[in-house]
Image (cartoon, rainbow, N blue to C red; front, side, top):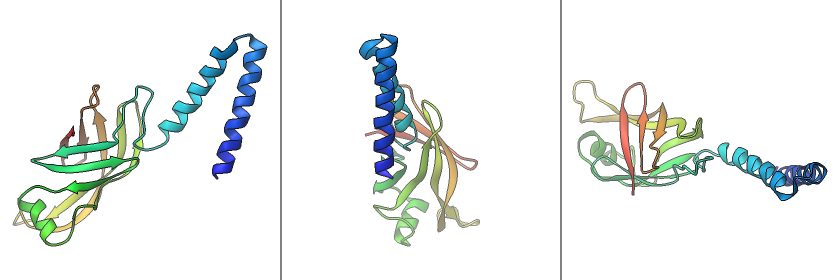
Amino acid sequence: MRTKKVCFFLAVLLIAGSISAYAGGGVETAQDVLDIIRDASQGASGGGTTNSGATLNGAWQVGIGTIITIDGSTGVFTQIVGSGRLQDAVNKGFISVGSQYFRNLRKTGDLTWSGQELSIIRETSTPDIAAGVDYINTTITLSADGQSFQSSSAFFSNSFTRK
């Protein structure tokens, strides 16, 4: 697959160079084509950068100290700090440092992503008791300055701050 990508990019570069030479646009026309190719390839890669340089990659704090580290299309717990249902889920082995929190993240707009977020299922009669975990669809909206984001699902939303 990697060989096909390399061949594709080489073919595009060759065509771009031919167009540039024919149009008399010199380096600027070829650079415009390269910028379009770079933006298209980065936009398809989950947590990668966007045209504006926005990214989800990195460490994010949620709640009173839990840290989620995002790399590409996944985010994992790198620190878990909490009480109630969160702590009960840790105690029961449902989650731990290294467990996936976000999965299948995919860029959908300049500052938006979609994917799935971990949900700790609770006992109906006792909300602080963890009964299991599941993943639910979520939408992530990154702030314009790239320092915070909001995840929103049909059941809950969370605010994250870049560490």
